[in-house]
Length: 515
Image (cartoon, rainbow, N blue to C red; front, side):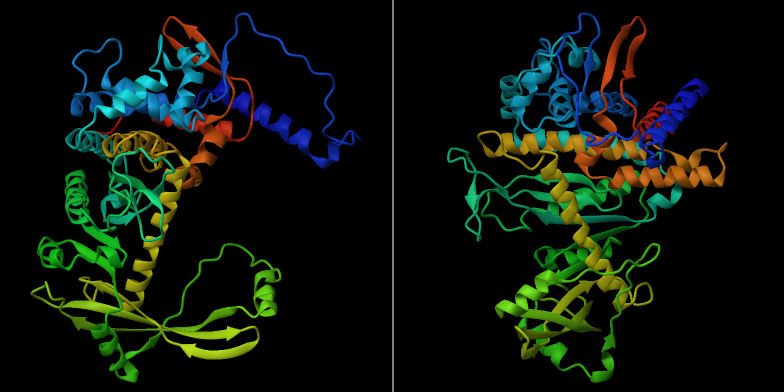
């Protein structure tokens, strides 16, 4: 970062802190009391509301996103004037710019400031974008996802050596509801919800969606998951990960693949249904086989005082049935599934649950939860396996972010076009992740330990940041767009502390990539 820019940031930061400091209160009350307001239209200056999007555009150029998309996707015979990458980036950038649906493209394409910010004379309108998604067939969608994964590998190559210790691949399904009655391929699930049921294969290390597979709403969660698990394994090994771990809930315990994965050196931890045979084995275990499970909860700083539990008070007052966990116990045994030729470790978690109604105790319950794995005892204990399996719940956060970003929606009229839209829209989330990954704190040699630690914390914060928070904090900063002979200048018109992170991102993204 240049020294002039650093001085400007320090000055604006000092001014902001001085203004909000209670010591400098001018006596104004009430605070929100604006004077008379009038509107004017600027004759020359042009500005956009999301000035931070220039950082995303720089990341697109640095990682070669356009080239990778056009290399893997061939849908158009002529590029008059748009090529495949124009259409894909148009949809993704619309979501990053604050749009939530295809119709919001109309606002951007009629705004000269936005067109100048993108370096475009014009961009596709909503109808053209929808027609582009309808051109996709299944093979085209898979090819596009392979192109995205090629870009991921470039971003992964910028990471330190410990990043490649183990790839954790997770799978889950999610319902994308729709009220439309003329959408081909929709179905109704067991909850009576109409819509699509996409499968998500993701990398837990970075919360990136490796593969999205759209399916009818009445299809089971595990359908096609074995194939896409294998494709994800291949992607991670090609990238250089030294080991691979698969995780999933009970729907993804595909026993027909266990032997093959084990022989291939792939580890897995899956939930498994509490079948009568497994419950019988757990009931017959000796008492000394059970070990109490103590959850280790991470706490930062001084513990805060707990407020009253108002929900619990209502439950007791109304006499609702309530379940309270009293303790947890773990044990393990060897088990050979019917479609396997060898035994695997089964970890059984027994919960002691007290069931009450109001303040009256009804009975005690001891439900079992089972996990199957090929990880040897010498590597991970039963307690660690349970913790490993519970960490898969974080994938639910990724699913919620894909919904928040607009990726898990169904704006079009058939299964494949909506599948294509989901994959294209997921690029908006991936671009956020790649921006964070391009902060290369581990490879900066001329900074001290404290600054390197701060860079790592910022990197992790951006990767873990919610999509809307990312847009609000780092992208939605008004900026004047100045066209110059050798490029564009985004002159930020507002200051907030997140501006410093934006400049940091821009500095790192512009650095040469590691080969």
